[in-house]
Length: 284
Image (cartoon, rainbow, N blue to C red; front, side, top):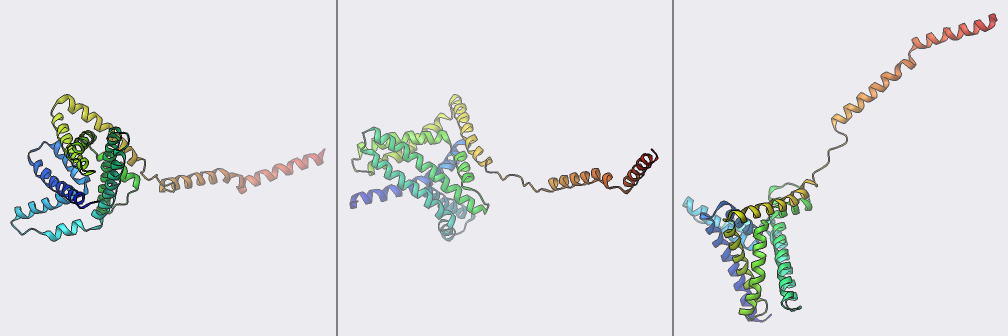
């Protein structure tokens, strides 16, 4: 990688770190559904999540009239939960970018389109799993990998994801054409295109027909994620008190049923009968 490309990638990272806080500030006057979608997108990208943490701390400190506590921000961003999110989300992002770049030269432009779709999907799901894993560590609750994956899936805004993916695919192609630097033009175009696609979905949500269609799509998608979480619920124990009591009651019932067979009174009743039978035979 030459020096010019490296500088370009650094500027891309800076651009992403600026976009996150800017989008967070834009949530003030946005609709609740838009806020939720933006919140999810900011949380699932480890870079914009870092910007969100910084902006929120600055807001809180300025509102309280105290100096900005950067130690609190540093503690949040160097803790094990966030580092886990970076490892999972960042790893999926690197793998996605390598895959997208590798497929760019395969049967153009179809390789670029397929690579952009796969890369966008890998980043979205990797970021979601990374964030939910981080939240599980913060809560201290023991969760299986399937439960974390189910929660990540159900939390993804599918219409928003489709809009970002579509915008990212178109943007990567346009960016590569306008900026003929390998990877750089494609990545810049993908970032800008994703933002445009997200904004387009939020505008379409204001139209009742699209809003109802998006809600139906989201409910079906959430059902898939929740079903994965429900299937991981622990099964009830077989040695519960209720089962033990029932078994004890059955044993007592069986003992009561078999008790008359060993009753001395019954034996006394049988003995005279046998003696009478013997006396009758002798008499004959």
